[in-house]
Image 1 (cartoon, rainbow, N blue to C red):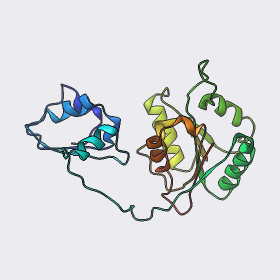
Image 2 (cartoon, rainbow, N blue to C red; image 1 turned 135 degrees about the vertical axis):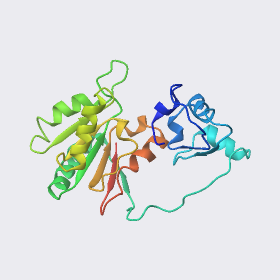
Image 3 (cartoon, helix red, strand yellow; image 1 turned 180 degrees about the horizontal axis):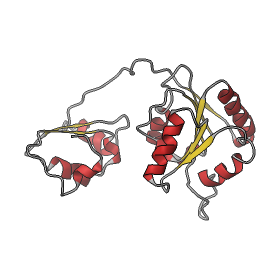
Image 4 (cartoon, one colour; image 1 turned 180 degrees about the vertical axis):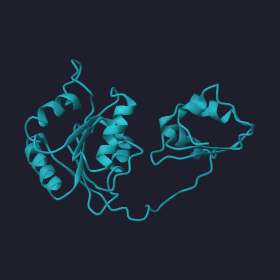
Length: 218
């Protein structure tokens, strides 16, 4: 059975659970993983992640977990060129996005916040979307996704991006895992210092799936 964290609910009962695979295991809490494991009678357990969390590293260090390493990329994956730009180069970055769109590419722009916060002075996706779609990006197709958009609407926007009906997808980290769009050629991460290394690594994984790819952060 394939599923999300819904498999952890008490209403889900397995007849004879013998093997549990937890993908992106760092996104689940210790208790969540334990509850799923407890649904079987000492089942085999495989936890998968590209970004090990401290607890996982400790378990492997002291021999409580065996390690299987996948050290090769899937067929067709391309190396990602990563560059850093300061805020005063932002207009040039936007122009580069427009040039890339004109060549048939698609872009992710990732923000640390959904909306404006009085606590921190950071760019947010909602204000940036309103500003850019009425100025720099007014002649291209732009979509926006974040955690406050209902799942059905979010899925529809992401599907449009996959189908090429959206040129630039402005988002928060909801696009961090699980998206496979080989035509996404460029990613810009605003306020990259606000993201952890694990998040940045996961975000990098959204590109590099086609013929040409870049990652910009600022």
